[in-house]
Length: 315
Image (cartoon, rainbow, N blue to C red):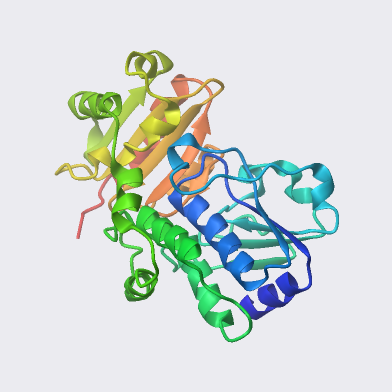
């Protein structure tokens, strides 16, 4: 499949790369990393990265603004996006061909070519593997591409702490750091928090609710976010705050936005993406997300997570 994708890329003059809504470092890393690999490899091609910009990720990359006309006869590649509904910028349908590259469970099998590897720690790891497979067939790595791919791997592995981190992950990261970029600069952009977000984190640690079977949750309403001058995207950065607390097996963050309540689910063992699918979401077995549209539904989510965790014993 990697060879087929490379051959298809070689056939197109214009390539437009998308990723999922509400992006994280792996979304930006895989999207931008692939773009920079292709720019270094095929300087004559027109390579674009599109989608709504996320202010907290400006340190990684700024995106392109293109017209609908640009999609005519173009190849579209979607990175790190499990289902079509979550693709940022629905103009992806206007292209000539569509390629999906992702490491989430392949529930929504869209695209003319699909490369899905659920064993990969991140889609950024897959893009580096794509480069390795094609480096003798015209692909080139650049410092900027390496920087983005490294950031994506770090982001989706929680600095190499998550179970998805494999020997391959460490090997690839070890190769990427030989390129010229600042790792401290990446960590600063990824993990440094402004004082108001630190205070919100303190509120979370003091006010989370522990229910049955080691399940915890916190509700962050619009009013509360306003009190801390925090955007929903900034609050989402704190979803791991409960992960180091002894006795918590799974936890849920409810973050209210203008038109919905984002549900962030995390687990230390029980597979929770099945619950996310029950609420029009999805994701990884231990890290998933969904949406609800009233606070009444929040109790339903917590109840389902508690039922899932009942009787589960941490190894």
